[in-house]
Amino acid sequence: MKGSDFSKLIKTRLTFLVTFSASIAFLIGSKMTGNGDINWYNWGKLIVGGFLVTSAANCFNEVIEKDLDKLMKRTMDRPMPAGRMTTGQGLVLGLFMGIMGTYLLGSLNILTGLLSVFSVLLYAFAYTPLKQKSPIAVFVGAFPGALPPLIGYVAAHGKIDEVAVILFLIQFVWQFPHFWAIAWVLDDDYKLAGFRLLPTGKRDVGSAVITFVLLIVLLPVSLLPTIYNFGGYWVGGVSLLCSLIFLYQGFVLLRTREIKAARQLMFGSFFYLPVVQLMFLFDFIGKVK
Image (cartoon, rainbow, N blue to C red):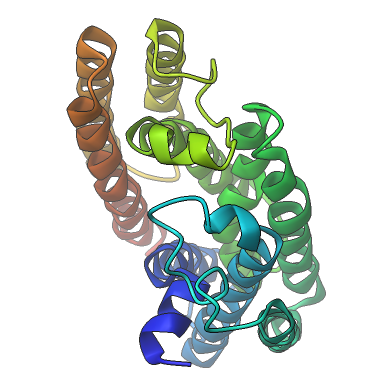
């Protein structure tokens, strides 16, 4: 198997985004502990363990969807549908990564390990099969998709508190416009495999309206760190600005309902989350010093 095949198997860009989200939350959680010191060794364990667990979830997803991946242009060259890897090999590799990743995360604390196992099971065995059945799949998938910051925070802090919930909620609500923008862009390809991920199942006013409504919901949710005094005006101001830009992109999609507008919303979502999370980290560190 070539390196490029392994990258496609574990969905490297998605895995890096998930791991980044967890690592930022770990740093925030570290500042909530007694002396506020960061255990960089544990941070490294979280990154490696999170990367392995996320890779395993993606691997299981591709084992289950191998025959469907053959039908879509963007996935037909993945190693399993292209015949460069068997599903048995993919399963073994996924199990190995899942066990090693869970071991590393569980060694930080038991709750972190349990949350990581729950995330993999929910993503691979609930969200994945639902994609062909109903748009509710996006709602179900938003839970494992929003667990990385919760896992990262708990890995450092050891428990779920208000900050952990806020981190979870921001990423949870963000999932909806993010995935619907992707689904809008890729709807023709998704239909080849029978995936129904847009809110109404198609590119129409209804899907655009629901996407816009969730972008409106995201605006006050992104301000929760400031509202609950875990962050100051910097995170509040940047989050507000990012949310308004994101909202405007959603409005353009609502007005035009063009793939170009959905693509701009999709790229906007890639920038939105890391910027808001980093500002939360920097502002939070400033407040707890």
